[in-house]
Image (tube, rainbow, N blue to C red; front, top):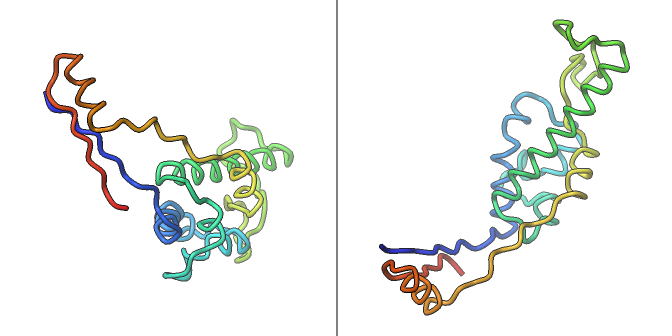
Length: 157
């Protein structure tokens, strides 16, 4: 049995910006980003530029950033539903009442605001990496389990 441990380095600011651009692309295309939230994700609208969110998320992996964006949209949805309930929406009704107007005047559109990003960022932190095993340690562990070699492969810097 051959065991391989692949270590992938955390993305730099430009890499984080690319990941955030991918994760927020649909929000941008659907017009769901408030202007201040879009500015926080600046690289989405200005390719090649690193936005403020990419700069402050040092140490985050791609999975951490994807989770952050899921939290952002979750907080946005929570706020949207709360506002609809305050306006008298019955959850059994087909469509909630108009909650808020977006900048283009479209009513009821779910909108991701800067405050949603702030809230998600306050609660997020990069996941800790597992303790690094040396190649000799990985091979020894594999031998103890009766398996093959335990090769360690490192990608990037």
